[in-house]
Every structure is written in C-alpha cells, then in structure tokens.
Image (cartoon, rainbow, N blue to C red; front, side, top):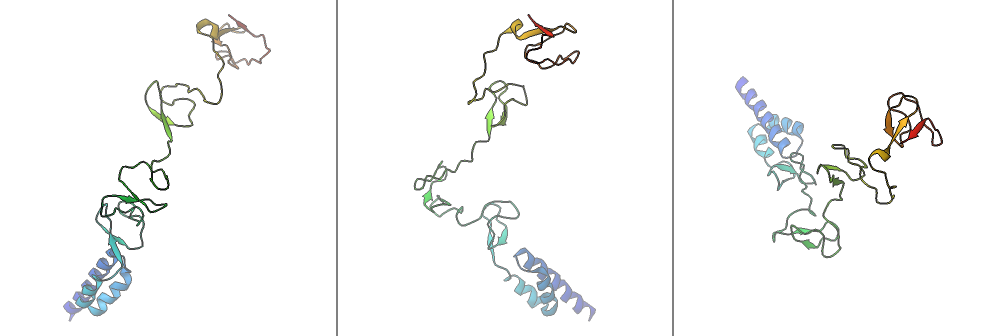
Length: 190
C-alpha cells in the first residue's frame, strides 16, 4: 500500500514539473497527478498553451512576446516568414533581412546613434560628451564657435602672489589658491 501511495505522489510531482514547463499551473497539476496517478502524468503533457522560441528552441507561453530564457523577441510582427523576410512592425509589409528601413512606410530599423568615436584615441564615448573620458580630448561643439586660443607661452600667465605659471583663463592659481576676477591684476600676462 505504501508503494502505491508513493507512486501516486511521484506521478503528482512529475505531472507538476511537466505542466509547469509547458506553461500551466504546477500546483494544480500536482494535485491532479496525485489524484489520478499515471493518468494525471499522461494528461500533464497536454497541459498549457505553449509555442517554441525560434531563438533557443525552448517551450514558452503562447501569449509571450519575449522569451523568458533567452530574452529573444518572439512576437508575430518580428517573426521570420517562410520566404526569408521579415514584416515591418508598423505597416506589416515584407522587408528583407538586412534592409535599413521599410520600403513602404520608411521606418528605420537601425537604432539611434548614441556614441561617437574620439579622433585621438578611437574609443567610443557618449554622443553628448564634450570631453573624451579616456584621453581627455575636448570635442568642438557644433552650435558654439570656440574663440581662437593662443599657442604656447601666450596661453600662460604668472601669478603675482607666488610666481607660478598658470593658464591665462584659469579662475584660481593652482599653487597658492588665490582667485582671479576678470578685471583683477593679481596675475601678470607674459
């Protein structure tokens, strides 16, 4: 008698596992598996409304638009047609696999550009960056014209307090810390 009860509990456990993998309620199928035994286990293979993910080949719920295992898009709009093309998510027109935009509605399939390449170090930085975080290159802004900067010694001035050479437009001396105002004569131009 104990073996009979153990067999029914094992059938309930496996019915719950199978039904849960097929998208059905595992607790409900555990109860049905214990109640019906091997018949409940056999019925659990028909439980759930599932489909196969075309990226990882795993069983997923039929209403899913994204695979929970591989995070691949499995909705009808992004699915592959039999002729090797895709359908546009906006107008549902057939589009070839490597097309940059939909020929019917003009929807672009390329993601918006969010980075740019630094001309000094060739690293990718954010599009909004004004300075490269890798090498310190300062990007010229498109909408603001930069003033012409003097070269070499013309860029420097001497602090009148400590005599240290600093950049001409620096607001404070980097050695003594004295602050300069635009009309202040505490630093002498060279």
